[in-house]
Amino acid sequence: MKSCLLFIGLMVPLSWAADSDNDGVPDAKDACPQSPSWTVQANGCAQQAAGPLVLHFDTDSARLRPEHFGMLEAFVAAGIEGRVMVVGHADSRGSEAHNQRLGSQRSISVSKALSERYGVDPAQIQHWSMGEILPWRDNQTETGQTLNRRVELWLETGLRVTNGEQ
Image 1 (spheres, rainbow, N blue to C red):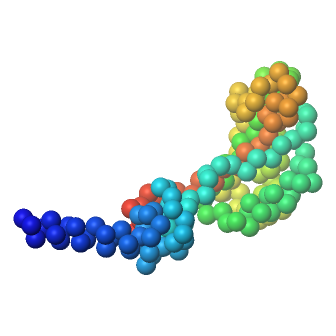
Image 2 (cartoon, rainbow, N blue to C red):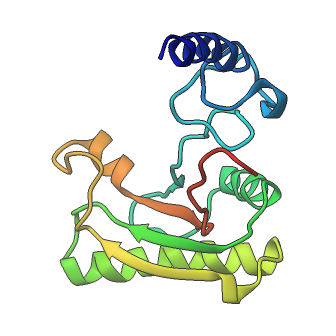
Image 3 (cartoon, one colour):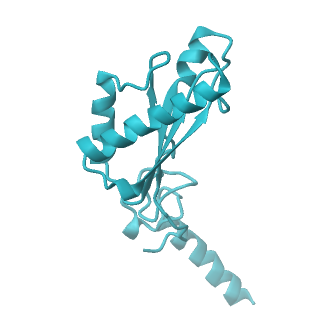
């Protein structure tokens, strides 16, 4: 029994020393050995926040702004392996039916830019409208309305959960 405890006592510090940033990925496989985190990729680097690219629109408009093109170019340049979900939103001004159409027009204009200007396969793009039903902020303020006039681009990558092994 003593030899078993001695063995466990020796093994714990050895395995701990092999993972200097305590992220669960052995140093030999850790591409980011100085990045301690509870949520790391299999290579030991911190996972990037999974969030959408958000493009804001002018009132009652589905026309892309000049700054949108650089944002879309960077989005495509980062790599698209799965599907792109393009979701259009509107503020609450106007009728619900009008805002549903406006959200759809916004998502279509972004989808067309992705395929026609940046070469994304249209089969990889899904677009739809949420209209006014999912506001980010209070529609009673001008700031809230501005933030609610948006298109969100989400990547569906089909990532799998791993135990840290490649």
